[in-house]
Length: 168
Image 1 (cartoon, rainbow, N blue to C red):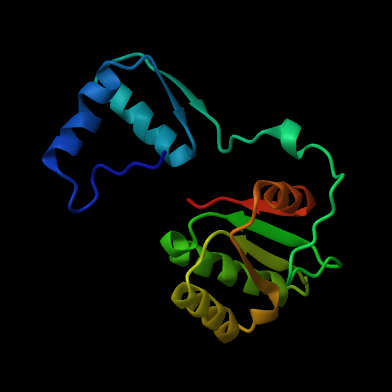
Image 2 (spheres, rainbow, N blue to C red; image 1 turned 30 degrees about the horizontal axis):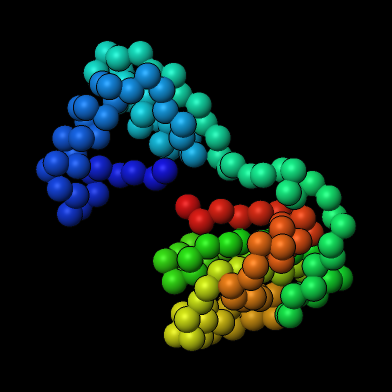
């Protein structure tokens, strides 16, 4: 997972935990990004402790996602356009979503039309904030908030997407 023991407000205990016993007692680490991999390797080197590090950016059940036997039918998605799918706790990742919207602007400026489909429970205030931001960026017609969807709909969304985006 993401971890940043140097973050302001981080307790002394957490700093100590990450810099000493966490890695001195470990034999390996499974990380989700190159930034975390670098931090883990640096901690292991500092402690002079051999550590096997594996980077796995995403873990997905490919058996569940491998077929395209159920077509996607969610309100707001234009089936004629490619789309990028993101799923997560929307209110917790508003700045990430704003970043993706700015990336969508870049895509549009290059003459490529697509959609950003955001799945996950979203309250009215956060929905309004995101849609207003998309409107100010002139991509409101390219951003779709589908809300909370069931597992079958999520699998269909993933299978039909041109790309999957992660909340990081």
